[in-house]
Image (cartoon, rainbow, N blue to C red; front, side):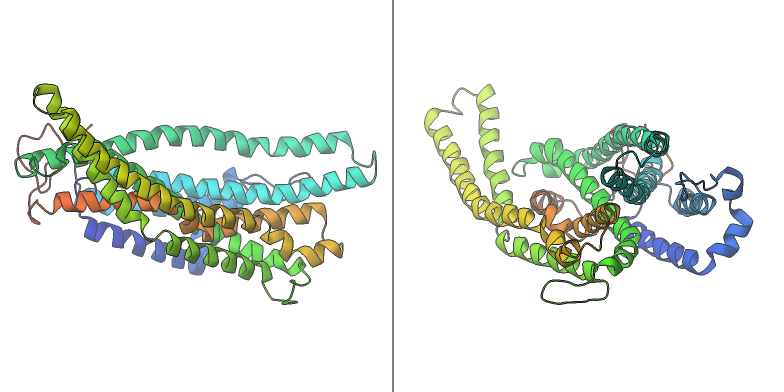
Length: 421
């Protein structure tokens, strides 16, 4: 699943995590010294103005973005020379590119959060005192956000296009690996489905969950300090009274409760999904045999196969019934948690509309990041079932078996510098 696309996964992924830790430590300890030598922020950064006191591309932020780009792509360099697998440009450089874009989008969200605070304060002023806001100021404020949103839209579209190609290359690598060992795999139950369907589903789900998880971590890094600071404006919490960093603890408590609840309620789902694919594969295989053999796929035999499919689906529906009750009840109730937490401050009139929107948006970002497992549980269940099937499939391939990285390789490869398209 991984070694057919990524270079030496047992080293690659831990080294990526270690590199992130080193890069973060270097930023927090020596960013000023490095910036004085390397930063181009003074040359390309946007100076603050009265209308935009904290521009998205200020000199300091340009240095931050520059540092993220530099450290990200520097990670790729050793892998090019030391262990350049054929899919290097997609698996290594492509993965870094996707994560860089995720970070860019998180920074966009942080910039928009600041803008919302100022803009909604302006609206509150206009509604409270008619004609007190100059139309020029109002429309200029709207225009300041355009230079952030337009590039973000462009990048998002291009990123979606890039990810589609990235996933297809990963699927191609897995398919080529399995087909190189097809003689020892062909007799396994549902072998064709594993190669044709499960490779596509696995690459899509893993990529989606990874991007979502990394995005959640980056969101927490950016928004947790912001929410902690904004919590200073919350005078007290219901029942608990004044709490330092109150909204951070509320977000953690809400997300932890939901994650544990859904994990307990949905504990049977991965096994049922795995069993579901087995009976579906058996049913599909019998139908395929019936296309070439008049004695196969007869009504009685098909009734038996379809009966197994129906039985498993009905069990799945029942388990999803009470899982969805817990899931939707929790997700709906959690929408009101920040309003309850801010209740005393709202009723006491200590918040402006802009500050309220900033807190609400920051709380939502932090809570959604902490709720990653709760929000992604059904997708995780699907991933577990696909992983179980592919793991069982791969167990028939010897552990030290050589790798064919692509269909056009005439021999097995354990390494090499041939780069597939």
